[in-house]
Amino acid sequence: QVQLVESGGGLVQAGGSLRLSCAASGLAFSSYAMGWFRQAPGKERDFIAAIRGSGTSTYYKESVKGRFTISRVNDKNTVYLQMNNLKPEDTAIYYCAAVFALLGLPMEVKEYKYWGQGTQVTVSS
Image (cartoon, rainbow, N blue to C red):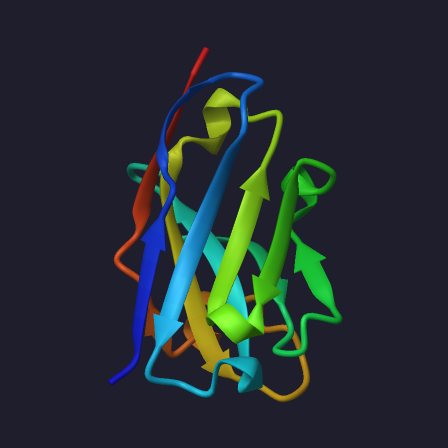
């Protein structure tokens, strides 16, 4: 049974930083591409970043480039999202997701098979 558990969300002032973690279990972690998505109230779930199973390739939504960094430690079955210079518009529930993918960097919600329960990030102005 695959489980993804996010942690690290919270309330932060604009300009601050947070690091989200997503611990995975029940899967061959290094064979899975991992993604981070977010969903603000009344909006669709939106892609933020993805990382290949090997960790050698990443891809970001344009609006977070230079501020967010996705990384993974396969020995710990964990993927991270370091978020710097946070803005009020970054406020959302953040989800990690997994899909079996030896190659490629899926960026669509429908491409991912497993999802975490989400963690709330609130950025105050």
